[in-house]
Every structure is written in C-alpha cells, then in structure tokens.
Length: 114
Length: 112
Image (tube, rainbow over all chains, first blue to last red; front, side, top):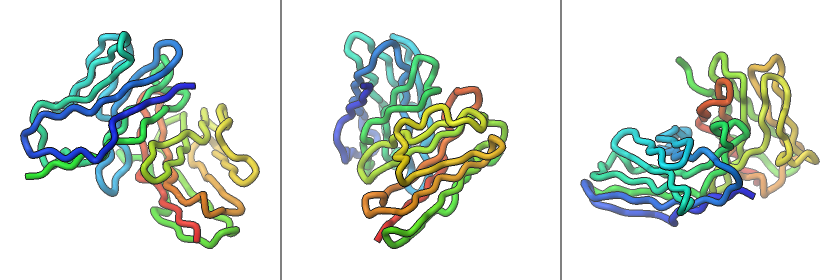
C-alpha cells in the first residue's frame, strides 16, 4: 500500500538557518503530495502541495518539488524563524488531489532557537 | 469563516465506558473525514463521508467504533466500549468537492 517516510525528529536549528526535511513516498499511480504543519494546540494546516511531477509548491518561504524519479518531496526553507517551530507532516493523496483520504508520515518536530 | 469545530477538546474516561466525539465541518463542505492520530504518529483515516454517505469505512474497527453524519452536515464518532489502546487524538477534516482538507483541532481521548 501507499506509505510516506520522513526524517525523524526533533530537528533543532538556530534562527536564520537553512532547513531541509526529507520526505519519500511509495505509491501506485501518480499521487498528489502535501506538506501540513501543526502548531502547538492547533489543527493541521496545509502548508503547500504539488499535484504532478516537477511541480513546485511554495508558501510562507517554504517550498518543495515533486520528484517522481526519486519519489521525494523534500521541504526546504532558506532562513527559518522561531515562529516556524511546529510539527511538519508529509502526506500523499490520490491523483485527484486527496479526495480518498491522505496517507501521512509520522511527522517531524522542528525546534528553532533564537 | 469558522473552521472545522470539534468537541470536546479533551475527554478522560475509564475503560469499557462509551464516548462520543462531535464534528461540525466548514459550511458547505460535502466531504468529511475522521482520522486517528496516535502519539508520535501521523493521522490515519478511519472513515470518509460524501454528504451523508460513508463511502470509505474500511479502516474503521466496526466492532466498537461507529459513526454517523445525519443530514450531511455534523458528524459523530462513537466508541463503545473504549479500551486502553483507544487513547489518541481524533481528528475531523472537511473539504469541498474533494479539494484541500481542512482539519479541526482534534479531541484528545485518555482511557484509564
């Protein structure tokens, strides 16, 4: 079945550091890919998405590129802030955009120190 | 616009007791999802509704879990009886025409 593997956390960085959170997936067909973020005490929020190979999703300085050849969707940000501290989830959905429900990775806890 | 509302936020019960969670999706959203999130894990889909019809309940443990979405709006997820292993966060999400899913803050269940 479908699965998502993302790097273990917690990941601790200093403010203004470069961020990469790795995500790889296993799926049949051509899934849509997502990054969700969960701030303390809040629900999951969509951060960005990509629906086909070579698409780049971007939002709030974060970006991720759908790489079909490596089955990856790594999350990057050039300069992190303390306010980026949260848990980040990589997820995949069906080719229709996730209508059938999403398959999530385990999440990566990001801690940004001032 | 109000987001997905779940209640209660927290629930503590003893094992073998029944428990129910309520979800009010974003107005107009026809698709509703219930997910289970264990500690340190990502959410896992339990059931998906299209309007009032459960179109995917393959991951719902039907011996003790049940769900309903009367009139295609609010939804209730029930566990009866609860077991220690049911301690987790129960998330509700909704979407319009199967587009982006919007999540509620979840209900954290502790079974003692």
